[in-house]
Image 1 (cartoon, rainbow, N blue to C red):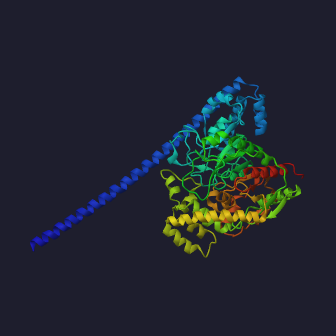
Image 2 (cartoon, one colour):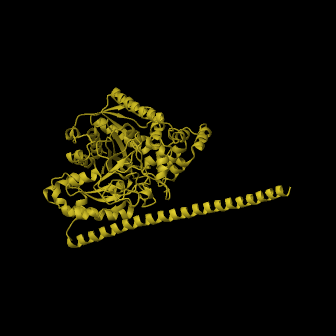
Image 3 (spheres, rainbow, N blue to C red):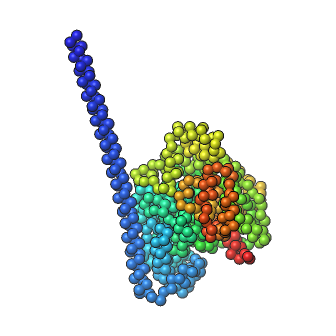
Length: 587
């Protein structure tokens, strides 16, 4: 009996010891987690500060160089240089009436001024000062002496492609992207990197490293994204030509918001080597690098310069198709499809008014306009686009955001991505009777769990492209006139209003070339019409859309021009037609 009592007593003591040890282990584990979190937070802050310091130092160095040049060249006239179009500027540089130095320092000075107002630059490329001294070796290049801005995710040797995320800091590119190499070969001088939104998949332009880029027409509005630094800098006059990238409107939306032109080529027409995505492997919705500029002729000249033997040699995966100048310069009347909404997203009243005005101008010019309805966009936006981009249930995106703060512009999206899959499925069930769109988006964000389902998705995308081409042929159209997202949004609305990207992302899914052309500005009457805006679904997102575009009087408005794959020159020719008709219209 005594032995039994001793055993029980021993077991109690062991139990108490185990409980104490367990508590201590839990406490120690919690302490380790807290210390690690604090340490990671501090490391992130240090990395951000170092990146900001690099930017400040590069801006200060550029200011000193500009001041030195101005003191030694007091008669230089920057205003006259900045007033020239890209074709005019290249002509004067080639004939020698302007020298590359005058042009370079005029744009560097203007860039520094624009950046102070709009916060659009991430770093001055200091090597550009050295390249300027050697640029005469490429005097025969189509872009000889032209300063070019590049988006943050375009690789330039020894500079980070941050994509607005902490994990990409302090990882400088080992070599230039193919596009940068070709630009240099053609005599251009890449001179500044520009801002983008955190993790790219957003059409605002803010990140925790470099902050918010604002609109050149109204600093209470966003510049758009993800090539928003380019949009702001070019729209503000600080760059004559820029290179962005577009996976869902990322060139076209900033062009629309900032009153310029932007072109997304057929994916594969330009090399994507050295253009950093936020994550790799997603093959349903395709990204493409492309140019942004003040006018369409500048976009065409950039494409002509890039589509050269040097690009085809550096990247053999690019088909050796030189720019078809004959197609771009053609004046043959076009048969043009058009629509005012895609059945999923209703554009703002000012955008629809602008589209109708452009349609009327095209008809007056002798073109044929044909009503066209995109196929099943209300289904495709969810089942192919969202399911394609987030097939992994947003895992890759969330991994890229680890180790640092989430930017306010991205926070609404991240909250949605972070909801556990089981809870997403419950919310889908609960919200179905009350919301026509949100449940299907939540369902798509759950991702795809089996490889055969991925293959089915890829097959469905291929089938949809074939159906759309057949639909296009049935209407016997050459090109398509479509609404754009716009006017520029109030700050912090883009991340809450991802549904609208159906208007632009459709052409990344289809891999059709598409461009944005500025055609008008918001009027007082447009603002009055907006008061009655209800949208297609009259749901939460339609209400947000109305709030996002209020207070836009005087802001630019754009339309979207689209062509079939590999007919990039035809798309640009259509954009040029729209631009010229608007420019010369009689009031």
